[in-house]
Image 1 (cartoon, one colour):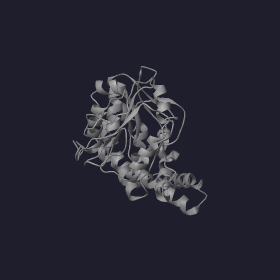
Image 2 (image 1 turned 135 degrees about the horizontal axis):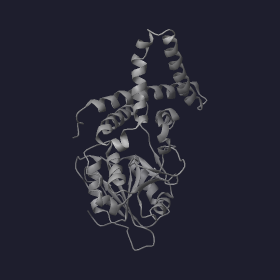
Image 3 (image 1 turned 90 degrees about the horizontal axis):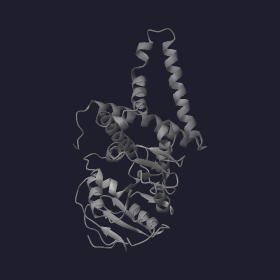
Image 4 (image 1 turned 180 degrees about the horizontal axis):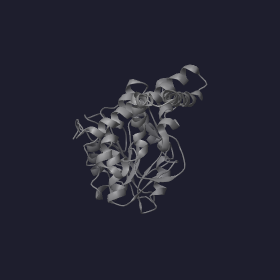
Length: 329
């Protein structure tokens, strides 16, 4: 790796921004352009593509990793990082101008090991991407984790995605980094180490904001959601302290109810009517969530996105509960 670091002696904490990806594209260029506009000076950027690539600019180091997964890529980047804080961001996301300035304030507390913030749908996304973002940012899907998509009140958390996660390097090294075969889900493993092994805090700060390009509805969105569900179901067994929570089971329970719930109700007076009422209320809630678009077509698409997201996640979560190991293990 050529030494292009911008890290310097400064009253500002030094930050290493790490971006893992397969190959460069337009989203990466957008991300780097936004990083170049940060109102923060003491940082370096480390890019982790699979293959060598042309120089990306001053202060940007490039480490070709070969065809390895994101957790190993990020561990490779962290070993080369010179910053006191490691800032992980996805190549299809870009930061707000005050991203680093706001994040480093939270690290003034020595008990804080990591800081995360909302990854809001990128304003430039197309219709189908924004529809996917609306599904994720609606209460029926986002639920108790809605703050991951939208700025909400500051809080302490114990699980946060690496699309926007900053970690104190010394603590990251103490817990052995990611050191995980899982993807997605490597962030859950790291956060579990930080909170349960190192006994440190992870802070959600609404001012530490990035903008994230969404997977478009429906196929690519389903694939992503299915992977999330599979890994979360498996993590219920592997990391129960952060994954064995009732809200993660809800889509599976609802899917089972939709498919089989009417059977026992056949033997109860008024049971089928009860089932129909519950399903209609659910459909009404899904449609109401999409109504804010004030467009009939968009409303139906978002409602279909919500319903299908629950089913795809629920089925794959159940698969994760049942499998003995994941393909990447």
